[in-house]
Image (tube, rainbow, N blue to C red; front, side, top):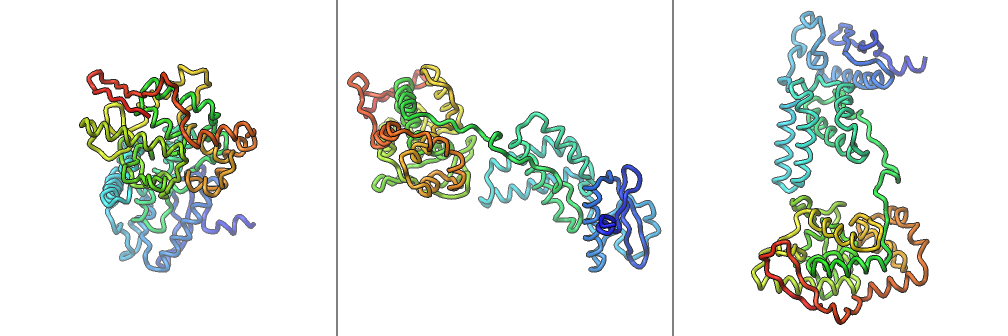
Length: 427
C-alpha cells in the first residue's frame, strides 16, 4: 500500500515500458515511455511526473517535447504547445555547444586548457561515435549506462569516476534547455574510493633518500640532483616544481609561493587543490634553492636559459612533463641496493619525516596541501614507527647538506645532447 501511494500516477506496462497517468488541459492522458520498469526507474519516473505537474500548473508544459513518440499526438487540443518550443538537437550538436562554452571559460581563465582537452577526449570517445546522431533529449539511462560500462571495462575506479564526471557535466549543460526533465546522467553510479584503491604510501628512510640524492648528482649532474633533492626536502608535487619561478622565491625569509602547476606542458594558474600556499623551507631545501639559482645564473650567462623557471633540464629548457625526471629516477634506483618505489614517494617521505620529528601537524598540512585528517590517516603508521635514531638523522638532514667528500666537491651538468655546453658548479 505504501509503495503504491508513493508512486501514484506511475506504473509498469509490460517488461520494457513505464506509463504516466496525469491530466492536462482537462483531459486524462496515459502515455508510455520505453524504459525498463525496475524499482529505480519507476521512482525516477515518479520524480519526472512531479516536475511535469508543476509545469502544467505554471502553463509551461510541452507535451510533444516530453513525449515525442506519443501515438495520439494529432488528438491533442490546439494551442497547448504541441510543437516543441526549440528545435530538437542531436547529442553531437550539444557536444559542439558544450565545447564552445568550455573554450569560452578557458579564454576567461576560468578553466584549465588541460581540462578542456580531457572533456573533448571523453566525449569524442563515448558520446560522438555511440549516440552522436541521436536526439539529446531522447537518450535514456539504460542506454547511457551501457555505453559508459562498455568503454570503462579495463580502467581503475578513479579513471571511471573521472569519465562519469565528464559525462555528467556534459548532460547537465544540455539539460539546462530542458528544465524539469529527468537527466539520465545523474543516475550514473560513481565508485567509492577505499584505502586499497589509492596509491600506496611508501616513504623512504632518510638514509635511502641520501643515497638517491647522492647518486642523482653523481650520475646526472646538478640540474637533476638539485631537482630531486628539492623534491625530497619540500614535498612539493612535480607539477608544482615545474611551475616554480624565480619571482616565487623569497630567499630572505626562506619561503616559496606555490600558486600554479604545469601538467603535460600546459600551465595552470591554480594548484591541484585550488589553494595557494607559502612553503617554509627547511635549511636543507634553502641551500638547494641557492645552489640551483646559482646554477641558473651560470646557464643564463651562457645563453642557455630564456625563461623564468627555477628548475630545468640539462640544456636549460623548462620541464613540460614527468617523462624525463621519471626516466632519470629509474636509472638512479637501478644502480642502488634499494627496493623500487615511484617518484611520488619523495613527497610522502618528507611529510612523514616532518611528522616523525614532531612538527606542528596543522602547519605540515598547510604547507603540503593536505587536510589534517587526511594527513594523519595517511601517515599515521610511519609516525608510530619512528625511533630516536631515525629522528636524530632526519633532524640533521633537514639542517643542511652533508659535507661533500674531497673527491666529489664538483657536481657537473650532463646532457643528452653531446653538443650542449658542459658547465661546472661547485656546491
